[in-house]
Image (tube, rainbow, N blue to C red):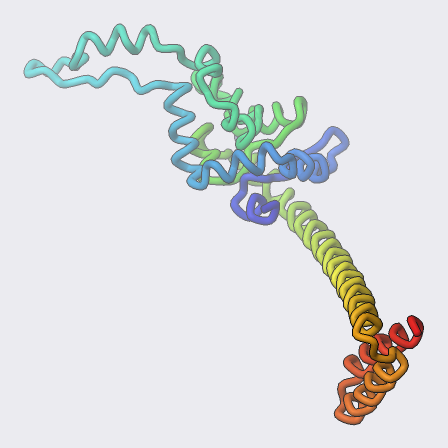
Length: 257
Ligand SMILES: [Zn+2]
């Protein structure tokens, strides 16, 4: 999941206070179940971003061009509706919690201030990067979904993201190594458990067998030697595992006599 997020650009490393990359913290943020679940709920992040953008900035009333060339609002009710619909920061509480979980607070707050930022001539991407480095959380990533929300990155953003790429690659490699190690440990643990279970099964079967032998009035010693003889045959046939199994059963039978 983490790789997919990095690859799809939802996860990005951003410049930290000492110029290093806050990759580890981001991985923690991303690894938080809430974010992973939120991303999973919105497979199509671009259309989800578009929906978020429309919630924060509802479309302006549609205009028509009159015969004399003047533009007019097609439907006057739209004007009222548009004027009374919350926009920008006032619309933030209309978003579902997944929006912040998926894109991070920096990008969502930048979206809410987008018109003010544009009229001030500020780069919204730079703004979002700064917000993330000050307040934490994920910064804007170089992805289509983030562009739907806050527009295009400028040259400085592109340079910063390029510088981060090496760090993201390293982070990715680290996560992969860690995953591999964890999988190996888990596999070994599963094998050990399986072995324990099998051993317990054998113990139970041997106990049942020896009880049955005793109950039938047969001699456990005779029965044990029958098992040993079979073990010799199995070993000769190359089945060492079966041979040992039969021997252990024989030993248990002999012990009950
Ligand atoms: Zn910028």
